[in-house]
Length: 101
Image 1 (cartoon, rainbow, N blue to C red):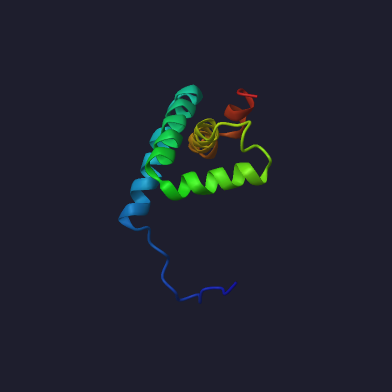
Image 2 (cartoon, rainbow, N blue to C red):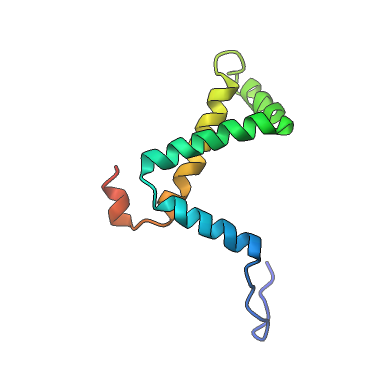
């Protein structure tokens, strides 16, 4: 990986990146159960809205041998829940996270 030159300006966040960071920080303030529930809804929405996501998820479930045993909707919800947990983890102290384990 190339190192930037010492005189190179610091990279600046775009407006979209700043918005996403602000959204993630806001989600981090939610109780974990709420963040997981919201993530599950986002997983459902992504599955419903994206044909390519549905195709990839079905392919991945089939490759794992779970095509008939696991509902793709359930897998999408769980993936969303996992994503919903990330802001909670990223913006909490180690001590606060240990209380949840």
